[in-house]
Length: 238
Image (tube, rainbow, N blue to C red; front, side):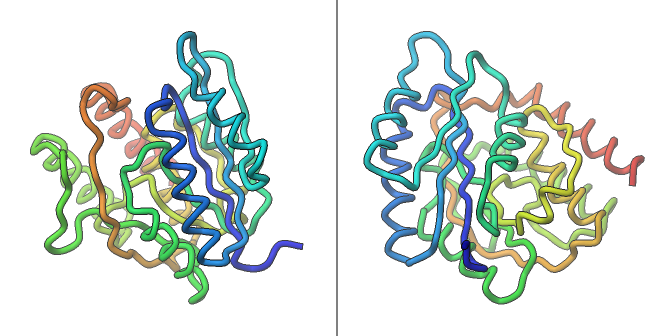
């Protein structure tokens, strides 16, 4: 039987063969050391020439904590997260990344913070004196505008609503009707959770390292439009 503080770590993965092994090793190490009951659910979008699925399969042979789903073709990070939620077995869900963008020890702190009775824990990349290595000025100002708009429209007192790295009670996510197909789901989840009356959350500092442009899956122009449309949709459907 899962204990109250158990966590399912959802890791969407598309063309992550350069990073996935080290990332999963880090997660295994820090969560095992913290004596947290956990599972890692890797949702892999498989395309020709990429070996992410092979690497994860090999690791899962010896590590019972690693579960995986392999999907043919690029299905998108939105559907990957939704599938991970459906597959999760533990009481809390941590949405994480397949590359080393965050300090895994910060992720452990986020999960442990749920012990204090919170329903959600948000990782905040924009805390005072934060260093966001590799984060461009264009990304920074667009992010600040989007987060400020969400704060005003929905009353969510968060400095980093759009950050995908968060911990939620599973019961909250299971009750959400999510429509996001891409990175816009990272705004949709906390907004809809808040609209459903889940206001008991806290933010904690999260060290963030932006990945190099050649590895980034984030298309600024396309994703900015999707974020805007998602915020509008959530506002008029509240």
